[in-house]
Image (cartoon, rainbow, N blue to C red; front, side):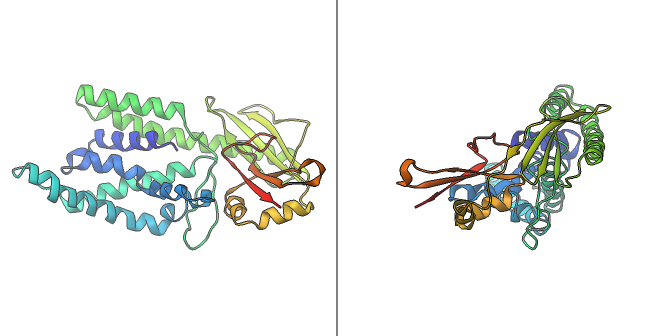
Length: 303
């Protein structure tokens, strides 16, 4: 999920009553849901898309990061907050740890729910898992959380936030169930076992489909209580027997990308007359159109 939604989840947990447990509770609850995304620093380096949602999102990090965040908040409490206000009550370390764990653990759960996926077993097993239930920015979740936090703060009551969190859990279960029904519907009409039934930006009951076939990908749509509709055309993957593609796949900049990509395809551009570089674009059909250009792609230049 986007980081604003992660932060709003922490804010809703705070307004639901958890902010009363200790000083710095609200700050901990809003920082925690973003804490696993410290791996975003890796994007400063080239060819690093494979770093995202890896080690800092795996179960080992999820066991360690709450202690790190609780220690940082405790250090801030001792060296900054209470130096400015010596009479302020100290933060309770045990409570900071509890709140850090609760807030941090919401992050991978929400990330797992969208088509980008999660690697729960990192750093030991580099395998992606996908729930395909939420769009990366779910407008309905965002609006519900904003309304809950605003109402809770205006009324001084925890009830709006508690209601929103319960509704969010019910919404998540419903979205998982709809995706499950959609997967069964696609499996019933498609002989190819590799496919994705993913959410749409605005309609919770609708799903977008990608079916991997030997020669490429077919796209389609499905709605709850409706039929699977697939495009008659196929977006070709690219000739994987092409020696340029074989060479591009071995390039360092392609290795991490191919580990991340769920539905990779290839586009080769050769210079006119055979003079100059050959460019191989590798892209992911989840996010990039037929041209292979966009953020979810990598270019490999061959002599």
